[in-house]
Length: 457
Ligand SMILES: Cc1cc2nc3c(=O)[nH]c(=O)nc-3n(C[C@H](O)[C@H](O)[C@H](O)COP(=O)(O)OP(=O)(O)OC[C@H]3O[C@@H](n4cnc5c(N)ncnc54)[C@H](O)[C@@H]3O)c2cc1C
Image (spheres, rainbow, N blue to C red):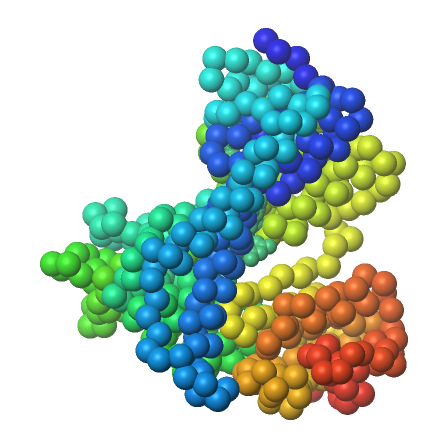
């Protein structure tokens, strides 16, 4: 048995940073990775998908050459080169994580699957490692729903999509949320026919209906076929085609060449030996944690997607900061202090901070709302990218900003003005009086705040 001061399982977004902090204090640290260094974001999530989104955007813009006064001729996409570009960018990230961990002083890297054998011991291959502190950063993977016929056909997930170096003639996507929409728009722009099948009545059901409708509008205008309220799903193979039935009468069938399952994520906690450590999980398998990310067993923490408190790279990174601050800096940081924020990388993107309109309505507060169409934003007009809108919600009594949705060009960047004001607990009037740079999307934030009106009941 080898004894360490700390064991970290998983090299996702939180694990490597925590290893650096702990090892930096002189602690002896073991970090275990069973797959590719850097985890989901680097290998099968953010980095590769945003690299692919960039290729798709470039092709789209080239096709729109006439709108800008040039012609690029017929645009065809070489998927092998698109994939090679993606592999290059993602490969640099994963190699960077691996290299930095392997040369980190006071840190030993184990490559293999880790499982608890007791609350203080973890087995990797033939070796048992022991530590008084164990940190779980094991992440999540694609959740595959039980659909009749699915086990008999080849289907894709976000992971296997990474190997695709050809153009699927007709990509069927099950799931109309972040992952499905990003892949859907990018493959449409690469040249595939795309059908997105959503179980609910609208895309990204957690967002407000105006956001869902606007996204459905621009995806539809790009020729993506959107199907809602899919029920009694079934799939089968018919010759070279995948046939999906989407209603209980079996009358509506959708045919495609490939199927991507994008119906959510499940935590990598089923083969971790959590029962042998006594670590509690919820009924979906997420590790139960308190506000400082401590599990039910003293000396064991869970960070990142596996704790169910966030599903993003920045939430996992924030988990690292919270654990490090509490353990090493005497700084009492908590999960409940953070403000919900994320982006959807369609084109245009959605930047979201804080509460939705539906959430503020439910909260019973007196609320002011301001909204502007991207058509009225000069920067958007100059760029020829006028889809979407920006919306800000303000508490009428405290004057603090409650939330915002920026669906429009640069919305993923401009939203940080709102986020920072929210963290500062500043009155919206601070932003209203701020002089922003012209011409930018963010310069319209003061304009929106000039024109707030009471949110109608
Ligand atoms: C297609 C897609 C696009 C995304 N785009 C974005 C985006 O644009 N922005 C954003 O913020 N988020 C995005 N996400 C989400 C983001 O990737 C994740 O939230 C983030 O990677 C979470 O990281 P993590 O730290 O929880 O663990 P992960 O990155 O999932 O890493 C966990 C690691 O643990 C390892 N592991 C698991 N079990 C064991 C074990 N028993 N023993 C040893 N090692 C183990 C795994 O191999 C893995 O390397 C995207 C996700 C997907 C799927």
